[in-house]
Length: 113
Image 1 (cartoon, rainbow, N blue to C red):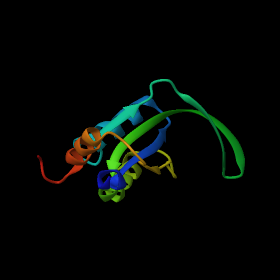
Image 2: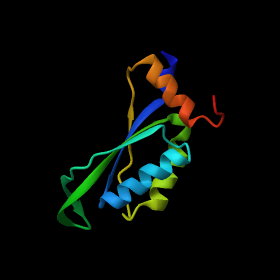
Image 3: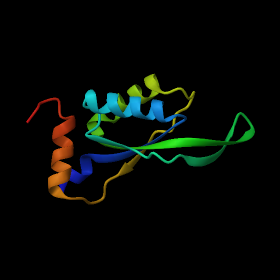
């Protein structure tokens, strides 16, 4: 289905729930994402930053968007995010409900349907 080829799921982690909610609201308000899920339970993250092993609690955003909105969405995440290098990972949607994916594309379209 052609609709699937244009859809993406983006993963972003945030240091605070306040920051996660702010990014989620702005992404949807600006039509950069159709939907953003904010996982309320923090994840424990381990990573190396500036040569040091770090551990932190982070909140995960699961963002649904399209390839045409990826660049603008990434810019908005970077603008609102407190990290020097925020996570922004785009996953290809291999399959999905035609109705849902059609709705997703309509929500981020520059034209309201």
